[in-house]
Structures are given as structure tokens and as C-alpha cells.
Length: 111
Image 1: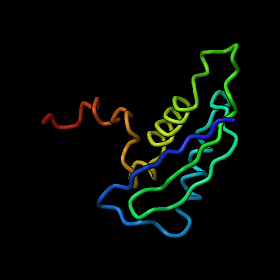
Image 2: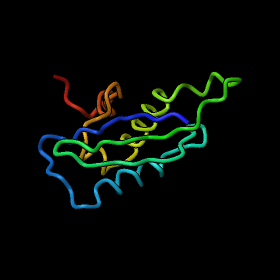
Image 3: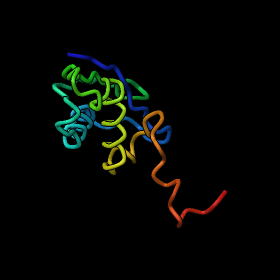
Image 4: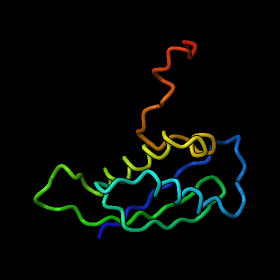
């Protein structure tokens, strides 16, 4: 089993949510997990400007290199969950390295 520590940073203009914030984030991530992720467990805690997460993954099958390592799988899950969840998009900044979904929006004014 592999464990990855990661965080979602709260947007500066958003105040901490009620006590269920960690459970809500964990539920959203579970909702966007695929069998390919190999996710076994998620735990989390709240800090003043972020939610910290421990993601536990099954170790990848050495005969299937396409599965990706635990860091890759964690980043993919966070990005997928953030892009698919209006609640995560509203409350948290995109995960590091994630493409901004509005970047290619033709309705977005050009800078």
C-alpha cells in the first residue's frame, strides 16, 4: 500500500465551512474515483487555509506500468474531482499542476 499526503488550498475569499467540510471533500473524491486509481482509503483534517488529505492506494501492479505511481494517481484524482465538482471549484484553488478549466472557454474575456 502507498500513502500520499496532499492538500487542497482554500480560496482566499472563502471562509472555512461547517464541521462537515472534510467529510464532504472525502465524499466528493470517492464519487470521482475509478477502479484504475486503486484507492483504498482517504483520511483528512482541516487547517485554517486548506484541507489536508492522506490518500492510501494499492501498490501498482508491476506488470502494468500504465497504472502510474501513487503521486500520479493522487494528482489525477484531485484534478478530476476538482473539475467535476462545483463545490470543490467554488471552495478550493485548482490542485497544483491542474489545467484551469476556464482557460479554453471562448466566452472568457481575453486579458
